[in-house]
Structure formats: C-alpha cells, structure tokens
Image (tube, rainbow, N blue to C red; front, side, top):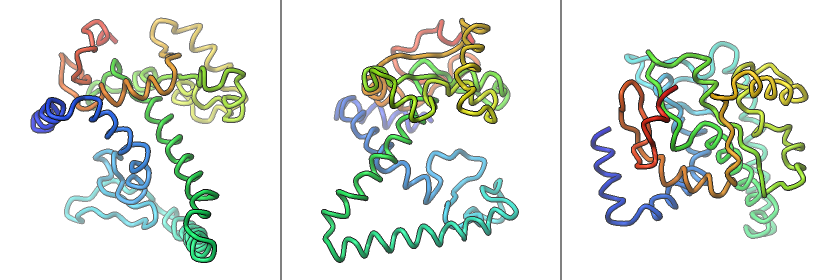
Amino acid sequence: LELRKSFLNQFGEEKGIQLWAGLQSILHLIIGWPAYLLIGATGGPDRGMTNHYYPNPLTDPKNPKKELFPGNWKEKVYQSDIGVAFVAASALSWAACNGIPEMMAMYGGPLIVVNAWLVLYTWLQHTDVDVPHFTDDDHNFVRGAFHTIDRPYDKLDPWGAIDFLHHKIGSTHVAHHFDSTIPHYKAQAATDAIKENFPEIYLYDPTPIPEALWRVCKGCAAVEKRGDYYIWNNADVKEELLEV
C-alpha cells in the first residue's frame, strides 16, 4: 500500500491529478470490463486470477482459491463459449466483408458503450470519496449494504424514461443489496421503506453522473487506514464521515 501511494503521489506531482483521473476513467470504462472477464481484474483476492471463458481455476494448485464456477457451472461456461465464439466469428466476417468501420459503427461501438455504462454505474454504486472500506473483522452484511449508493440519472434523464427502462437499477440499488430476490417492480417500495426507517444512514447522491465520475476518478486512487477503517487518501475525506 505504501509503495502504491508513493507511486500515485509522484505521478500526481509530475502529471497532475486531472491526467490521473482521465487515465482512471479510460482504464475502468474501456479496459476494465474485458480485463475483468479475461483475468478477473479487480475481482478481489478470494478467487485470484480467473477467466470467464475457461471455468477451471488459473491459480497455483498449491495455493487454492475459491472457485468462480463450481460444480455443473463449468459445463454452462463451455456452452456459453459456443455462443460467444459464434458472435465473434460473425463480427469478424462482417468486418472482412463490409469493412471494420461499418462493423464498429453498427456493433463494436455500441458494445463498447454498453460495457462502459455497465462499469460506470456499478462503479459509482459502490464507490465515492467518503465511502470507507472495511476489514474482514469490521465488515458485515448490513454494513456493506448501507455503504452502497443510490444514484439517479438526474439531468441525463429529466423525464425518468431511462430509469424506467432500466428498472431503476441505479436509484434502488441499496435495496438490492439487502435482498437480491426483490423483483424490480417492488424495488421502489423497498427503497422507500429503507429511506423511511433509516434516513440518517441511507446513501443517496443526486450528483450528476459525469460530475460524480470525475470526483471518483480524482479522489479514489488508494486507501489509507484511519482508526478502524480504510478510507480514500484524499483531503476531502473528513473525520466525521468515518462515524458509521
């Protein structure tokens, strides 16, 4: 951690925090999703390096990790691979016949946008400059659920159409962490109940999505320990925010 912080501090001094934030956004939104699928990037230490197209563990057998695809899930991964291979072959054939620009405009580009949106919203639902990290000793199910964040599309969706079409996955995300079996048409009622009963600890941030993304890219680079918690090492985090 100290080595990483030293590198980040040096990088910030030499290139500027804005350049670092821009790099963070590219790494997460463009490269992050493929890297997660191929090598399990940012997937956590429990499973180590993983691959979503090859179900067997990629870690050292002498140091076994928790399996990503246990039991009969392995067979389902191989079945899924057939579909992935078919789509990839179709995209390559399309590019060969009609050119790469057309294929990217009609398929590749929209795919990148969808992947970037998926990473963006997931990232912002679980990360902000004042949301601490917990050790295994401090973390529990309820505390973890209350440290996720509901975010509306705000100005990107003035009439609420996008939120409706996406089944309110961003504005009712906290409820999902309390009970992932709640159907989308009951998620708003569950969210309202959480707001009513726990108004002081329920997290809701109406900050416009682009602004929230830039804040997270700039302020969430590395964590440092303060008391019993690990928080993002930026000057905006105040001590009272750790009182959870």
